Amino acid sequence: MTLDVRAEAFWDLGKMELELRRVYDICNGCRRCITLCPSFKDLFTSLDTEAVDGDAEKLAPGALTRVVDLCYQCKLCYNHCPYTPPHRWQVDFPRLMLRARAADAKHRGVTLQDRMLGNTELVGRLGSLTAPLANWANTLAPHRAFLQAVVGIHKRRNLPRFSRQRFSAWFSRRKPASFVPQAKAALFATCVVEYNDPSVGKAAVAVLERNRVDLTLPPQRCCGMPYLDGGAVQEAQALIRGNVRALAAAVREGREIVVPGPTCSYMLKQEYPWLDGSDDARLVASHTRDLFEYLMRLHAEGKLDTSFSGRPGKVAYHLPCHLKAQNLGTKSADLLRLIPGAEVEVIERCSGVDGTWGFKREYYELSLKVAEPLLKGIEAARPDRVASDCPLAGLQIAQGTGATPQHPIQIVADAYGLTVQ
Image 1 (cartoon, rainbow, N blue to C red):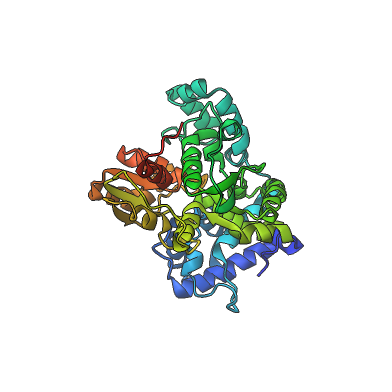
Image 2 (cartoon, rainbow, N blue to C red):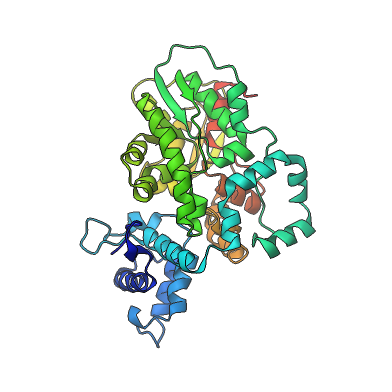
């Protein structure tokens, strides 16, 4: 197995194909992940054909790459797999899929579709700068047809709205609350909070300061995951290096890194040490906490303010895949249950968007099919509110149910009676 991005073998297409066949053969003998995603269903269907007869060595190259293309990096198979390191078979299916994309991209080039979907900062800056116009244009059928033809974003995929006010601008101008700190943290805001929905970041700041957490907002770039989705490893690594420098400095100030987005928190924890490999990357990873992981740790230490006044009613809470992959339990739902009058139903189903995959014209319909159990679960719950920590899952939920999901931190801020401007 070669998953060292600094090794020449990582980028060798022939060796990569051998590794795909090795792992596919192991998966064929297990099949524990058959219900998880379209990749495994397609793999086992191909292996069960008469021509292949269960032999991964006989799979055509197209069958090998189709499995890679269908992987949307939910990461759930890693926790299901009994053969992950330190097992001698050393199976890491998600990283093998990333390796296959990266090696292909290095030899054939990163597609325009993946470059555009991966460059969230450029899209975010332009969208924020022209927010009213950009939001209006994204509702127009001709413009959406153009995006589908040129960039490959499906014309019916609902898109995140842009905010004219960027979160970092608001943070730098705000007047911090006055309190004696009981903890210190650095906020890694995420691109969605920065460019699309600053209200989530504002709610996070309000709740953390209510709990006497001294906050900073270090210089930061995109976490790099969108580029990684398209195999653009070098572009992702450039972003990671900048983030590692700034965030490691914050850790050395005695701060924990708090992240309100599960994909970004997963990236900082799991992928930064792998892709960057530095001591600073490992330092950042070991001090990164998902937002509700952090808040529930305060609660465990007896430091969380539980004097809630609002009553949110019944909440259908979607547990994102990238939180499940962190083995955190249901921290967001656990905190919501501390609010008097809250009834929380957890729905553990994939939204089928997972990064850039569900935006692509090739996979839009399939992503909705993957999300059907989630959408049906929400509708069956008949909730007063719908919540998810994942903004892309929120887009899918809104598209499939008509509901307007909130980040759980917004429900907590409401329950405190906090007014966030």
